Image (cartoon, rainbow, N blue to C red; front, top):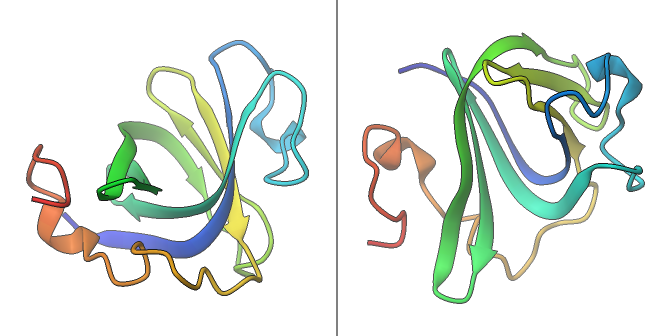
Length: 122
C-alpha cells in the first residue's frame, strides 16, 4: 500500500451519504450543518483508502478506515482536500496551523498499522 497524503494536525469534516450532492460544497472548517467535525486528527490517504486517527484516552485510535472512490488533493496543505468513499461518505480536510502539541498522533506511526486491523496502540 502506498501513502499518498499524510496530514497532522488536520481539521476534518465528514458528511453522510446523500447529505450533500457535491463534495466541493463542503469545507473543513468552520463546522457546517449536517456534518461531523473533528480537529487534531491525522488523515492518511493511501492509494486505495482513507484512514482517520484521533487521540483517545489510551492513545491514537483509528476512527475511520474506508476505501475511496475519488480523491482531490490540494497543492497547499492548509487548503481543503476532498475524498468521496465507495459508500458515498464525503470527507474534506486541511492542515490545522496549530502545532498539535501534546498529541500522541504526532509520534504515531500509521505505516506499521496499514496492514493490520489491530488497535494502533497495541
